[in-house]
Length: 175
Length: 180
Image 1 (tube, rainbow over the protein chains, first blue to last red):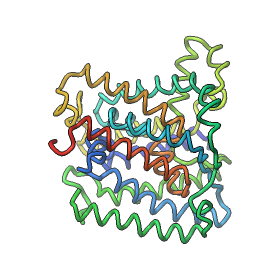
Image 2 (image 1 turned 90 degrees about the vertical axis):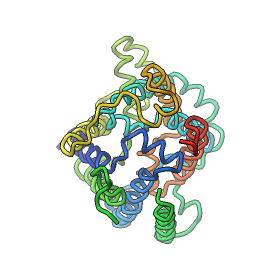
Image 3 (image 1 turned 60 degrees about the vertical axis):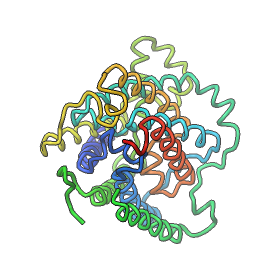
């Protein structure tokens, strides 16, 4: 099977689950940023709890390789902050904007057009970033457990407890 | 705990856990079937979409651009994944009746009114800023938020904190926080 068909099938399932989780909406995304409705974080962290156990099992059995994104300090700090600012204004992230249009929230088209323009702008700015921000400090493609110097399963168990505590807080506050 | 939300969606923990299973299967499937380990992500596809549009106007410009050359303007696994998101969300929303035409989102309307123009300008500018940020940080809430946190990537924990940190500040400034 070719990669496009596998991508399409995976995407259809991904979009179906995102829509059933009701996380595609502007009001859910902004609702989380306003601490009013934490649906998207419940959804995301539940996926992470299940996913990290499975991914690390696959890795420990030698079935897959991890692909960490580089911990380039300037890029992650400036890029992450810019993303947060833009996210609050548009009320969608890249994946959810596409699904939002598909469930009738057609105003997400403006966000998609803006993101395509932003990608084009980034492509023009890339040489500048490469000379500046990207040269500042790069710790490379490392994991939290590498950084802490402890076994990944210890980190996973501790993180599961953290995520469960966050869920308990959301349920207690009914948000 | 209910299995369905009042609007007939799935319980978010359950939906998230199912997505976690999909992420695991997907990583294994891409590794075994196409020989490339692919994790869920979306924002690189916007780079490729921009590349295709620019190619229509000026193919030389795209060929000469370092970033387009690095990311390769092509219809790849992730591009089809993003198209699939559209199809899956459409099937789900039409089949359970949650499909609804909406020109301005409710939270935005309460604060800025129902004008389509202002919403279009806001969403467009927000989109530009967010995508420059996502490409600089090398990921969005899919690539960093889901795939990165699942792999315990250090950069993803930092990115997620900043996505939310900056987003919380701007959302409270924009949408008036508590009085909403």
